[in-house]
Length: 640
Image 1: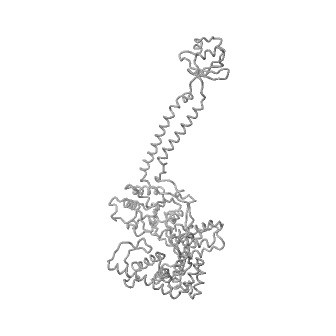
Image 2: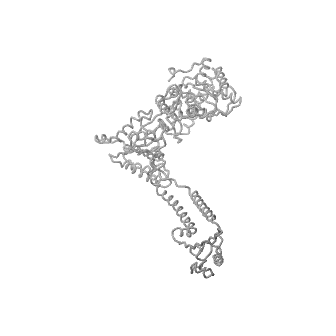
C-alpha cells in the first residue's frame, strides 16, 4: 500500500541532488530591486558620513599672517597646499598656501618676523599611503565599482538561465542513499501483500548475492512491473526492496522525462541509466510509467513524438544490459492495459507483480502499523475498524488513522478513542460533516424518508449488504447517507447481488414518490449509480437474459467497472442495450416499491427516528426493524 507502513519523510528532502537537478535562481525582477536597494543604502551612508563633517571657515593667507604677527595662532598643520590653523581661543580655520613656496617663506613675504614665526608651532603632514588615496579616490570610484558589480550580477543571472537550458537533458531522478536511516523502508514496514513481497525477495537476493545466480546460469529479471489500484503501495514497496537490499534508489515519475524540447526525454533516460550503472548495484524506479510507455503508433505526434522517442530509449537501455549488470528497473502503473507490448516482453519488464486491495486481516495489520505513534484509549478495537473498511486501500487506511487523531486533537483530548476512528471512516468515505447545512422542516422530512427507504430495502432484500448506519446529516456532497457494508470481504459479485443493489439505490426515489407524491433532485446520484451498474451488467458482465453473455465494452476504461468510450456495435444492438438497462432499473423500482409498501410501518418508524435524532447507529437501527418484524442479517445467513 502506498501508505501501508509508517509515513517517512519526503525522499527529495534527503536524497542527493544529482543528475542535473538545478537549484532555482532568484526572480530576475527581485534581483534588480535588491541591487537598487543596496545602491540607495550605500548612497545614504555616504551622504550621512559626508554631511557629518563640520564646516570649517577658510581664511586668506594675508589674514593668517596678521593673526600670526599678533600672536593669536597656536599651531599650523601643513597638508599639501591646505593649512589647518588652530587659534588660541580654540577656533580652527583653513587657509591655502602657494604651491611653489614653503609656508615660512610665504609668511615672511607677508611681513611676519622670524622670531614671531618661531613661536608658532608648524607641523608638516606627509600626504601619502593608501588612506590618503582612498579618501580622494573613493567618492569617484565607488559609483563606478557599483555599476560594474551591477552589470556583473545581471550577466551572472543570464548565464545561470542559459546553463539551465543546457541541463535539460540531465536526469532529474531523486536518489535515496542506502545509508539514510531516516528514509529507509524495509519489508517489516509493509503490511499485507505477502505474495508481492515473496516475488520481490528474489530481487533483493540477487542484488545482495548475484554470484549465486550467475554461477548456475540464472539471469534475474531486468525489469519488474508493479501494477495495482491507486494507493495499494507500489511506490513504497519498491522503496522497501531498495531498503532490504541496501542499494541506492533512483526515483522519478514517467512524466519527468518529457519536456517541451524533442529529444530531452531520451537524453534523460541515457543519463539516468548512466548514473545507475556507476552506482550499481542500484534500483531505478519509474513511477506512473504509462505517461511515456503507452502503445506506440497511436497517430499522435508523428515520428517525432517525444513520448515515443523516450520509450524507444528506455527499450534500448534495458536491452543493453550485460548479464552481470546489477541494475534492476522497477516501474509502477495502475493502467497496465495501455502499455506497449515491447515494454512487457521477456528480457525487459518480464516480471509483473500485482498488488491487490488488502483483505480484512491485512487491513488490521496496516492499521496496527499506523497506530504505533498514536496514543489510543482502552476502547479502541482495530479489528472492528478493519471489518468496517472493506475496499479501503493502504492510502485510505493511513488517512483514516490520521483523521481520527485530528478529530481527537480538535476536541483537546490526549488519546484517540474508538468513536474518533468510526467518524474518520465516514469522513474518508463521504467527506466532512456539514452541520451548518440546515434543512427546513419539509426538507428534513423528505431526507429522512429518502434514507429510510434505502435502509429498509437493504434490510429486507436477501442479497443486499446489511445497514451499519443511517444519517440525515449532510456529508460532502450528500444531503444524507445510508452506510451499508458487507459482512465479509468478497472478490466476486453475483447477478442477484447487483439486482438487489439497484433496488436499494432506488429505495430513496420510491420512498419520496410514495410518501409525498412527488420527487426531488435528491435521488439524482442514486439514479446515476443504478444506471451505470445496470449498463455494466448488460455490456460488461453478460448478465442480460435478453442479449446474452456477450461483452460490448473492452477492458480498461476510466469508469468504476472499466469500459472504453469507443462503440463497437450496431445501432440496433445499442437500442437493445438501452431497453435492457431501462428494464433492469424499472424492475429495481418495482422491487423497492413492493418492500416499502409491505413494510410501511417500519418505513415510518425509521423516518420518524431520523427526524428526532438525525443519526441511527447499527444497534439502534436494528432495534427499530426488529420491532417491526424484520430480522437483521447475520454472518452465517448471508446468501451467495
